[in-house]
Image (tube, rainbow, N blue to C red; front, side, top):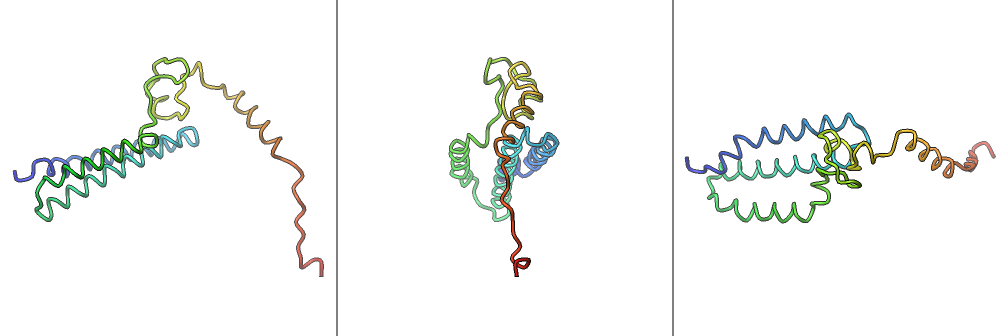
Length: 148
């Protein structure tokens, strides 16, 4: 085995990539409730695909695996700098520090447990109040062809 690390990545990271994309599709069913976390899984899938592609290029061009070290360092630095968008997943409630269920952790952007999350009627009342403040008399649009 000439390139054990690259071969491992090429053999198994495609399954990691597909698993992350499958999770992303499940998150899509939740709608706006999981939008930030859905984009985070998409960004993670893109990162895994880039690592997979780079390892495949190393094998194809028969380059040394030492190229993986600076590339891996760049990926780690990039993930650290973009951690706000890549890792929005929390294990505990942001309000009371109660442990979140898997569904709450993966599918809800607010990172709140059921006790701390706003109730659906509270959310709808807040949305209606916001819509009432925005809904004012729209300006009348006049067609210039009618004025001639």
